[in-house]
Length: 553
Image (cartoon, rainbow, N blue to C red; front, side, top):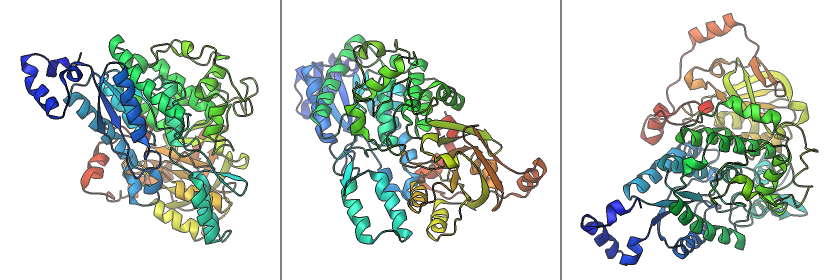
C-alpha cells in the first residue's frame, strides 16, 4: 500500500503516534487510508447536504475494510458570485481545488480517494486532481435539485434570472418576482436543469469516474446515499485491483463523454472543463474534436434550458445509462472503456434501456441529427468560439447585425437594463476572458435579462468570457484569442457588422485586412483589471479558453 511507506515499521512510529493522538487504533492505521474529499459548505445550495453523503461514503469504506479520513475542499457558488467581481473567482478556483487535493493526497500518502463535489467548478477541479494524483479514485456527487413549481409552472434557476429581466422591463411586480424566487429552488442539490453542475456530474459518469446514475439520482433521495456507500466500497475494490484514474481517463473515454455531451446538449462550460481534465491525464483535446463528434451525434434529450424537462425527468427515463444505451445502438460509444465499477462501459450497460421515450428520444427519431454544442471559427474567433446551438432560436441561427461594444459585463448589463439595445444588435462583451477578466466571468445576468425582456430572438451576444449552462439564446462565448491576448474582438467598434452562421460554423466581422491592420497599429492594451492577489498571479499563468483555460506548465 502507498501509505505503508509512512506508517509501518520503526520508521513509521512518529506517524502512528499522531494517529494514536487522534484516537485511531492500530487496526485502523494498518488498513488502507482512503481520503474522503468533502466540499460541503453552508453557502452553496448544492453542497449543504454533502455531510450526509460523506458519512455514507465513510460507512462504505469501513465496511470494505478501509479507514476513511475526511478533509475539505473549497467551493464557490456561481449563482451567488454572479453579476459582480465575485464571478472572477469560480473558474480560477478550479485550479485551487486541484492543487489543494494534490497537496493533501501526496502529503499524506493516501491509498485512494473518494471525491465529493456537486457544483460547477468543483467537479472538474476534483477530476483534474484525480488525473494528476493518479491513485484509485471514485467520484460521488451530491445530486441534482428537484425542479421548483409555482402556479402550474415548473421552475428552475433560469426562471428567476429571467424574471429579474422581466421586472426590469416592467412586465412583473416585485411581489411576483419574490414569489418566483421563493419557489425556484425547493431544496438542496445542484440546480435542476442541465446547467454546468449537472452537465459535469453526468459527464463524470460518462467518463467512467462515477457510478451509474451519479449524474441524475436526486440529492435528497435514498438512492443518493446508497450510491455514496457503494462509492466507498468500490474505491476499496479499486485499491485491491490497482485501478487508477489514468486507466479510466483514456482518449476513448473522453470521446465517449463528448458524445454524451452532444447528445444531451450540456453546458458550454464542458468545452472548458473536459480539455482541462484531459490535460492532467496527458491527453490533448482540440476544439475540432468537439465539432467532429457533434456532426455524428444525434441530439436526443431536451433538458432545460434547451427544453422543458429537468434532471428528475431524465432520471425517471433511465438517466445517463439509458441515454448511453441508446447511443450504443449506433455504435457511437466505445464499450470497452474501463470504469470505477471495475467493469467496462459495455458491461455496465448490459440490460439497460430507456424507460420514457418522451424524455430520451429514440436514436432513429432524434430532435436533430447533430449535437447540441457548436464550435464557430472565423476572423473574429481564429482559435474558436462556443455556442449551445440547441438553445438558440431558429431565427437567430444565422444573423448579421451591428456591434454594440462593451469592455465589461457591468457596462453591458447597464445598457440592457437601460433599454439601449435595439433589435438586430450584436452585443460584444470583451476583456472578460481568462486573462482579461481575469477569471472568465459567466454572463448569465445579461443573457437572462435579454431573454426576460423578450429580445432573445432578436439580439445576439458575443464574448471572450463564458456563459452559465442556464443561458439560452444566441450567446457565443469563449472567443479565442481573447481581447487581452490580442484577439480581434479587442479591436471592434460600435457599428461594425458581425456575421453569425451557426449551422455553417462561422463567426466573422466585416472588416478589410487593411482596416484591421490600421486598428491593430493604433490599439493600446488596457491596464489589467486586477493587479494583486491570487487573480493577478492567475492572469499571468492562465492559457486561452480554447485550451481549457489551464495554467501554463
